[in-house]
Image (cartoon, rainbow, N blue to C red):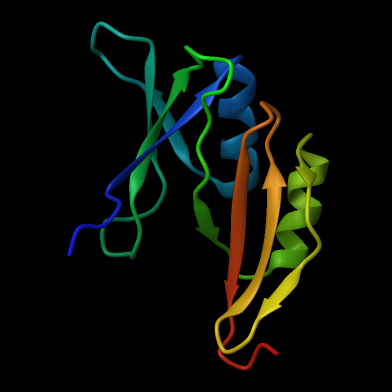
Length: 122
């Protein structure tokens, strides 16, 4: 079955976005050596589930992406996101039998989700 293997986050200010994602999630972000302004994101170790991605300059004002990021605690990460200049745009909600979820925005206005796994969520 096809599944997502890469993500791109479109940004207006790459330096500001890099600082945000490194500070909040501890991601490693580095400039790609190719002809485009493109920053590769290492979002975890190879043995961990998940995907890596990239930041790129926004070419269309409507361009964005929405991905969900697994976190150990939605409440803890909402605080980290707000402290780093982002914002929560929905309250923490339970997805019964799955976990807890909230939509947030980064410093570039991109919407993303954060998910805390918890099979006992009601």
